[in-house]
Amino acid sequence: MISIRPVLLILFAIVVVPTYGQQLTPDELKFFEAKIRPVLIRECYGCHSNQAGNVRGGLRLDTREVMLIGGSSGPAIVPGDVEESLLFNAMVHQDFVMPPKRKSTGTEGTEKATKKAAVAGKGSSSKAVVGKVCPDLEFVLENGEETTLKELTKTKGVVIFMYPRANTPGCTKQACGFRDTTKEFAAAGFDVYGLSYDKPKSQLSWKIKYDLPYHLLTDDKKQAIKCFGASKEVTKIKRSHIIIGKGGKVLDIANSVSPQVSFESALEFVQGL
Picture 1: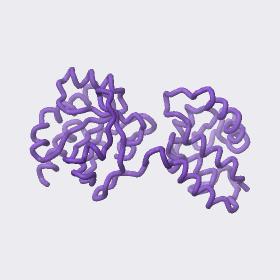
Picture 2: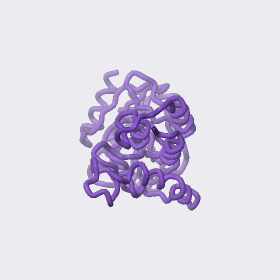
Picture 3: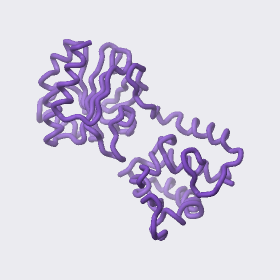
Picture 4: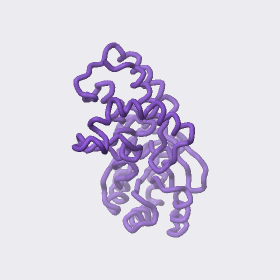
């Protein structure tokens, strides 16, 4: 039997644990060591720790870093996203069972309500779907100002291209391709934006260096790129682009494309509308 208390603690950890690379605050660290780690030791370390010997599924849970890396099935926790966090799903026996040979008993309704409440206020993690209105998302511009997808698509459509890292050869080729065709996109009724996990300062430097005429967005909450299907592992990005019409309806998504195919196929698509 799984009591609701360990499940709620795991849920809390998933929601509050910072994104990879950020530090826990003293209060978060104290909470984790006092409330979360004992649950992991009791329920999980027998199979998923450095002391386990043959670690099942390549998944270790004894440090935050290895939880974010995960095992063969993906990251154990995805900060702020309960649905994608395998650890929570396993603890409540949704997709597979962990610990083994246990059954949940009557906690499903409470867990479902708790999950809904936990995700609320963290921003939608829903996937963008062609033909449907995209969930609203938040971005930081290269100048430090904040904006949202709803604001960007209020009067025009947008083409948002995603790249692994600013100021690298392949990404520069992609960005310059969109730079050189910006007028064509505008004539078709679309603004162009770049999007990555790079800090605004790096984005601004790159924008100035290559005279990029459009804004570069930072996905500082690690939600938009995932929503667009371009996330790879924890902090990596598949070169991609998404085309969204005025009002927010998703028109096209292209993931794992080459730099040249990205801007050429995007332009061909909008000109064909």
